[in-house]
Image (cartoon, rainbow, N blue to C red; front, side):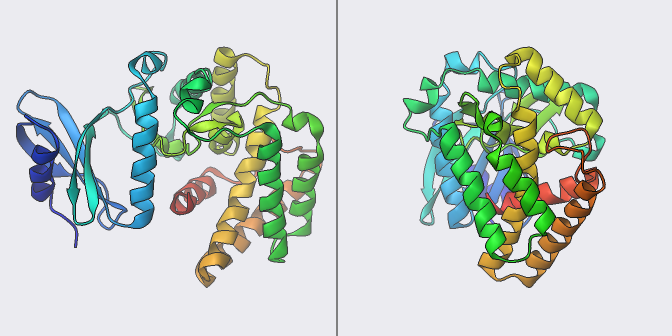
Length: 327
C-alpha cells in the first residue's frame, strides 16, 4: 500500500534533524518504484523524500547515494547544473526513507524539446565527461575500458541473435560496427551511465538539474548520448555540436557508437521480454526491430550514426519509457 505524503513528511522529520515542514505534496506517478513527496520547509527550502517499493528501486537508491557522496562540492562546481544533496535517512519497514534537496526544473518530452535545450543538455553531458576519472575510481565505482565496452556490445548482440528474432540485416549492420576498429578507439570518461532525454530538468531552455546517478562510472561517453543519436536530426545535431564544443573532437566516433547503442536498446528490450517470458514485450520488441530494419534498409549508404533517423521521435520516446524498466 502506498504511503501518503503526510506519512512521508513525518518520516522526513525523523530523518533530518531540525527539519520544520510547512507543506507536503505527492510526487511522481502512483504505482511507481518509489513512494515520494515534495516537502516545503518553513524556511522556504524544498526537499524530496523517497521510499523504495521493491528490491530494484532499493538497489538503485543505494547506488545513487554512493554516487552522490562521490560528487564533492568541488566536483559539483564544475557542472553547469545542480546535483541533489543528501540530507538524511531513516529505516522504515525493512528499507529506508531518504531525504534529499529538491532540484528545481521540469522534464521536457523529447518530442517538444527545443534546440536551445538540446544544446544545453549536450554541454551538460560534456561537463560530466570532463570530470577527473579519479572522482569515480576513488569511490570504488566501476571503470570499463574500450575493450570491455566492445565485449559488452558483442555479448548483447550474441544473446539477441540467439533468440532468432532479430532481422539478419540488423545483425549484419551491428556486427560490421563491432568489427570497425576505429569505432572503439576512445578514451574512457566519467559517465552518468543511465541518461535518457527525461533525465534532465530544465527551466527557460536551460538545464537546471539531472535525475539519477545510480550508474555513475568510468566508461564509454557514447552511453550518455545514445538517446540523442536517435532523437531526430535537428535535436541530435544541436546536442552533439554543443557536446563537441565543450569536449573537443578527440572522440570523432562518439556519435556513431551512440547510434549503435541506441539501436541495441531495442535488442535489450527483446531480451527483457524473453527473460521475463512476456509475450507482449517480445511482440513489441520484434515489431520495433522490424521497423528499424526497414528504416535502415531504405538507405544502404547510411552508416550507423549518420544523419538518417532509425526511429521516429514518438518511437524513440516510447522506447525510452519502456527500457527505463530494465536498467
